[in-house]
Length: 287
Image 1 (spheres, one colour):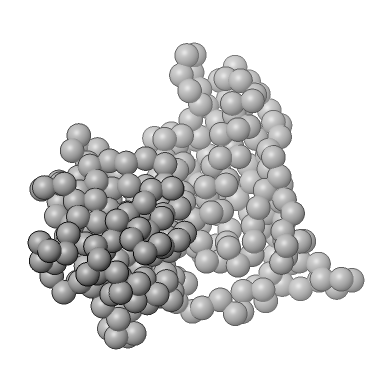
Image 2: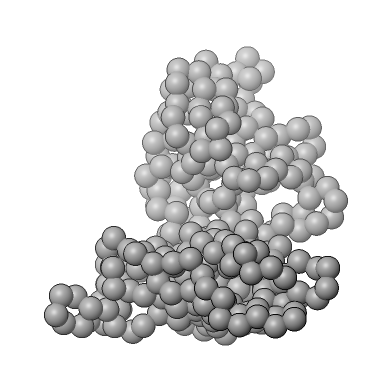
């Protein structure tokens, strides 16, 4: 395996984990992958548990502004490489310095697979000339962070199950008895109705008309007739629905994605839930 490849893959894995999108790591994890992390029950040998762990802990990681400098190679054998990454610059907590060790394995002619990762965070941070517990930086974190939406598993038409973080779904597009799931970097098709898919997602998803539902958190702009998403795609909004869609988007954007389920949040805020926000199927004149 090449040094450059292993270092680039390590940077990708660490960036994905600290951004709350651990499903991007899935193609690089070995079947025997093991992981040790810094919070709570942090030892696992299951890739799904690993991904769910980082999704659940995303609010804490974001609160600490964890980031890593570019990794360095500390050992390389014929089929094994060990990579180390230290903490990078952080705006709010410049002295919180996470450390990560990643062990990669690759037999001849195969791409590297991550077999082990150990992530740690020092228990104290320096503030001026004094030291304080890292935990103090987390005092203001919403108590509901541990209820952060977990990964959902969606089976595509080829029978492959995708572990998907709801926040990585840009929009859903209905196509007869199928739904195209548009992620930030890929799209796949699953056999489902749009309503059934929305029932599995948080209240931050808004149905703009019969064939499309969008992630309000990934909207970048809205003109008089179109909504532009973070991946550059533009979604048409029917004339008769523009006022209600704007209202629903404002309500959805105000929701805290770290707290509770879609149904619980909808009832608590008296806002329409994602799957039922348009009160059933719109009439043909609204398409």
